Length: 274
Image 1: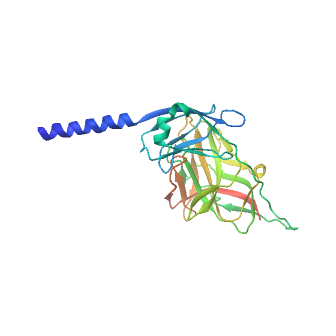
Image 2: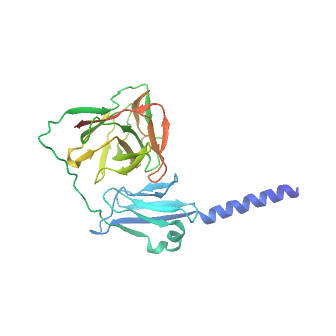
Image 3: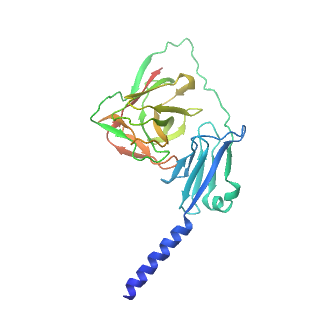
């Protein structure tokens, strides 16, 4: 009886400590230059599956159950990211209810043409299979899924992104299209200079995005992904996939670690010129 009481007491103490340490923080993210609220900014714990995305009005809510030594990172393509120790963020929360991100300096990609005759090619997985599929492993905001695509020659200019949908889209879904460099077989640094938003409508069977306005030039293999950035009444999206192609790589939230999910490759491809 004594051992049972001791065990119950220990469970209660641990649960109470967890509740005491877990806090929900609400805030807003703004553009430091224009003071405009920023929608769909990534907010999360670096290296952990805890995070979220600001809503259309720039607001977010995140529950911090992490060690005080962990880092909270707030980031979006086109802006200089900010990081805080969880301990400091808790302590100075009133000062951080509004967080301003500075716009990043944009450097235009320089491509030397030299009377080059460009060749057009489709790179990546062109499957339109409806029986083999891959999709979002979670409906958490910031959940991201994609694949590595190899190029034929450098430089390569990305013109259009394509994906085949293998499930019924029951409600409009807002996604973000991301491109990254690749390091050690994992996504590394963003390639685009601004966010590329994609709205998938009820009944859509494919996604097509014109990339020419974003002038994305790659020098080596790259990673392309779609990111879940707005909750919907639907049940997520499944994409066509095929075996024996570039494996699906995903992360549960925007600041989490990347993981290889399966041997099947998701049907993402790009129209490109080199």
